[in-house]
Image (cartoon, rainbow over all chains, first blue to last red; front, side, top):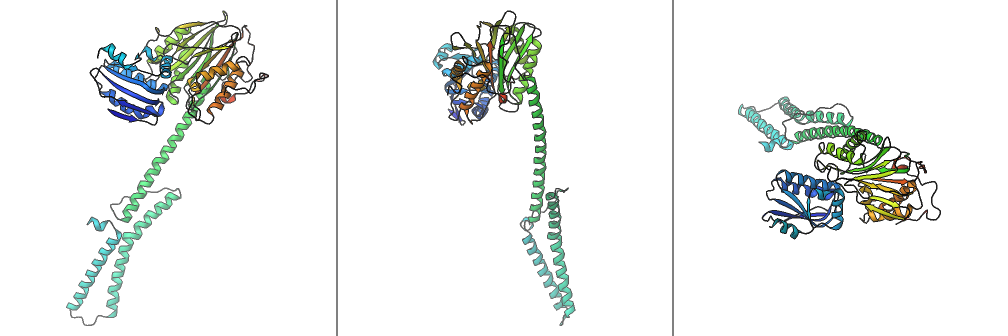
Length: 122
Length: 397
């Protein structure tokens, strides 16, 4: 398990499982936070080989529009290679932001990680 | 050998050894030739020779190169033309020459960067000016509506965008917010503005304008960029309002007869996120009664933080509208919300562009309120001429 932290943002890349790998976010994903973890996430998706990449936003307090743009870029990259980005466990305010922007029209969302695991039968 | 080349002192020491050896050879020569008495003149001649030899070495090795370096340093300090040195020496003189070369090279680099920075700042100012000219400088007078809009970019170039475009009976009013701010956001904002101005001449419905704008935009921007938008369409003949949301902030409507502020999800998906948004966005009719007020805003307003890190938020905005809408027209609502906003954020650095727009349905086809100053600049904000009697200083904070 590897940790990377910015001033207000920590990500924890959980070791991969059979079909997916989970990245846990903690703190606030704003411009400063994004800059700090962007490189790590880009490196992760560069040669990503599993079917799903799961972002667990259970401990994420805020996300700004630039970070959502980055999520879209990750989603596009994965889709091009036949994979998918999945978002789980977002707090109500973060979920509101996603809903307002319309992210859930593009990226699959589950309220819990278990729901996702059950869905894919992993 | 390098050890001796690295220091002038060692070099002098070398010359001294050489001098001693030569002196010893000469003395030995004189003695070997059985010179019993060396004349004073001969002795002085030998001494002068070696002194001259020393002075020559001193001048050649130290004085001459130092003079050359000092002259160039003087030229540099006086702003005159100077030359860099080529030297294979690695002693103190070589180090000074190398240092001079590096310093002047860096000076030139910094000077070029400053010149380039100045040029770019100049271009940025021009771009900012062009962007300002694209945004409407004043809210229009539209039959049936009183409109006041204010915007403030966080940096020279902003990502917030709004406009009022009338084509026959239809007036399209939109507010948009591009991801981030600065040059990339401003370019997208200008692209969208141009697209919308072109498309309202072709399409009558806000839905078609939004769908076609998205189609054109998606093909031209990278996947990390997008723009949220909320577009209203007002038909001045039928006096009907409708809206299309594209992932923008809530649409707020102050219902005058209830004294309540409703928030409606704009819906849809931000422009540029998918190639085809035609199945996701929809045009919704917005019934209005006399004195109802529509509020459009960008997230720079609700997501602005105060010194404690707390956000202004949607609830605080709704409370402010509920407080001020019964007392003031659009000009007063915008002024007082902006005042509350400024008091809330205090000196906290503004990180995003802020735009706020208030549109009141006057219930008649004439414009009732004329804004005190209908400029769209945030800094031109002036307190309305006819404030409410009792609650002038009341604040939501």
